[in-house]
Image 1 (cartoon, one colour):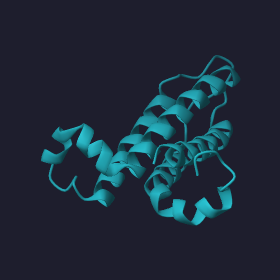
Image 2 (cartoon, helix red, strand yellow):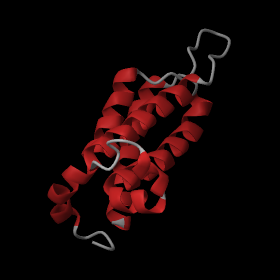
Image 3 (spheres, helix red, strand yellow):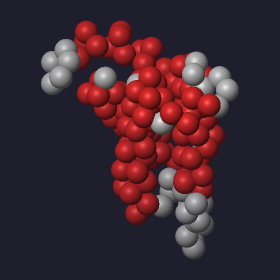
Length: 136
């Protein structure tokens, strides 16, 4: 599922960009953070939608208890993504003049993480509506 995962990752990344636009008060940081967030969202959704492939490529993950369960693996990916998104957004301090810098709200990070987990379950419902996309 290469193209469906990329399409869903793009949707999740665009949604994160919309949420990020509200949270980031430094305009010069918005573009770079949004591109970074979209790429990471696409990778996370790809891993979430292709659990068996990821586990076969990285066999060491199979040694971790419960990771062989696809839902647990997806939740682990989402938790890592949520912590990473929030940490990256908090890394840039505010500028002089009262701006608060980049700081995504935890609720927004949680919503993005939930969409990463839900992507493989939602795709079968979305697929008929996006049949015009290449590779579907």
